[in-house]
Length: 511
Image (cartoon, rainbow, N blue to C red; front, side, top):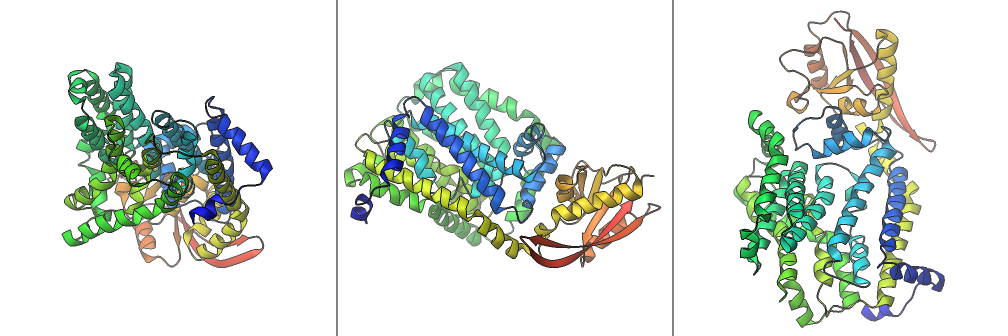
């Protein structure tokens, strides 16, 4: 396999361009070219490959949070706050959400490069980013901008600030480390594993007492608590809704099941980086001594990096069962970014330019092949989603708005449902109404459970859905002038028509 990899070369014109790209690394120009190409290619891929269906409910939910900024929801608030800032500038559209996801990943790559240049040099710096693109994490899993994906950028940023704080003891970097760690926690509580890794890495370093006697760690802790303070107040006053939701969705399992999920999910998560590790083995061809130096370096600074990488991946095996929450491999998404830096950081690990060019060529070919295949992927997704809600989100939301404007003669401001069509209407309706979850009203705390809305609202229920119909009838029981409409829709894509689905609209005029 190694000889086969070494026996071929990319076409000379392409190889020459890639070589010049590597030559531009010291100036920083190569990084910006990489980021621009990544955002352009993979945003285009997301837009085309998802053109046949509407956005995933996770994204639609983040948008509803952005409409109602708060200190917390069923998850911490960072994803919603970022979306609120984003959509205050960019249009509310599918392509804009896809662009946000890829820009988030580009920010992650920028921060990863900041860390990489402290530990590797030469072609190894760009190889770090290329190896990460041999995983599905950044292009495919990174597409769904939500609480897991927001950690993909906050973890590298926080890690870089921590490393600078530990190295320099500078107050500015210490404050940045505390603030960045707090932001990671505001993305998802899972980031507590990263904070624990910071503590462990600092304590295991020979210079730990110099660090602990300086103001750096204590300033970081104070700044972090200040940034977290509004959310901590919300958490206390709402009875810990975020943890209650986590246990409701991922709990209620025996200790044996919890242990098995932690071990099996961690093991299956290693599949994300299988190709990355294989490429590293082909390019670096490490011997036993190099592997030993890689896994537990003699240099304390590189050993700190190994601790920062390993602990967030290993701690869930212990922490998840004790917390009573079943672990998911998807939660490891933000934890892999240090792997290529750890693998390439030993000085004796060499990357030859021809090998680096081959890896870059493979990454480019895979990216362009995915882009070329995106129309076919869109066709497959259209076929897979027929009979499911995502085939109808936009059409139903727009028709509901049209009917409301026609009969009520006012903008649509609130949509209720026990299904995802409430949050879908928030995004796809041109009026962008706020959503009201009738089945789990705690998920839409901006609507008072004690006092139903009096300014008019609409509801949408797919047929047959008896629960939705019952909840809508109950919510509208005291209203007068209620209007009931039916709408039937069949999705189409490239001339193909899917099965039709009937929906019931209930319009409750203002008092």
